[in-house]
Image (cartoon, rainbow, N blue to C red):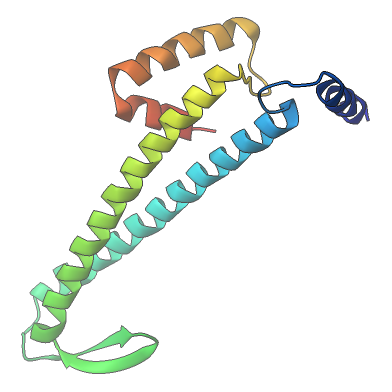
Length: 161
């Protein structure tokens, strides 16, 4: 209830103030939440693809020990097709390589999204629930050092939520 009254108060002060540049507090929070959700969805997609790579590796390792002329079945587009091991093995290895490239692409996108989130958070001085005042100052200093020092640290630091 108190949050609603404060949000309506800020809206009326923004509209009554004339020309005020910048988004309202609600817009800032909504944008920040949307950016965090995008990063989470990228992380879950990367984890899903990592599991597919593990499955591909398991099948490839199993098929390498089998006679190449042996029959095997492969699910292609919802249809189970009969092939030989020598036909299926190169296709599986190719799929594994393609999935690896996609994961690399998603990881770079997550790192850039992490940097973008950190910059947005610092620009609008956003604090997450549960962060103490002293803890926030220490983390913002560490986050700025990470964003200057290396992309992998800032991307990994933002992912934990």
